[in-house]
Length: 124
Image 1 (cartoon, rainbow, N blue to C red):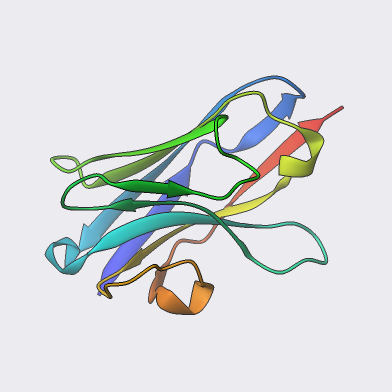
Image 2: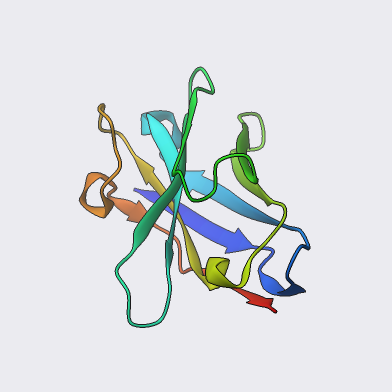
C-alpha cells in the first residue's frame, strides 16, 4: 500500500500561483509513476500532469502545458505541482495519485493509490 497526503491548496486570484505538495509513504519503492488529476464540480476527473518516479520524465495535459510544472523529490518521497498563471477554469479539487503500472497512464483507472484531494479556487 501507498499512502498519499496532499497540501498547498487554497484561494488565489487569476494570474496568481500556487504550489501543491504530496507526501508519499508506505511501499513507495513499488511506484512507477505519480500524477495529478483534478475534478471540478459536476465534471469528471481529468488528467493534469504525470511524472515517472525513476527518471523524472513528464507529460502534461494541453490545458496546463506551459503554466504548470510537475516535479518530484525522490529522497523526500514528495510530489509537487507548481501552478502559475492560474485561471478560473483551473478551479477544482486536485488529487495526487500513484501507480505501479507501466504505460501511458492518462486515465484515473490506471492509478491504484489516491490522496484525499486539496481544493484550489481561482477567483476572477
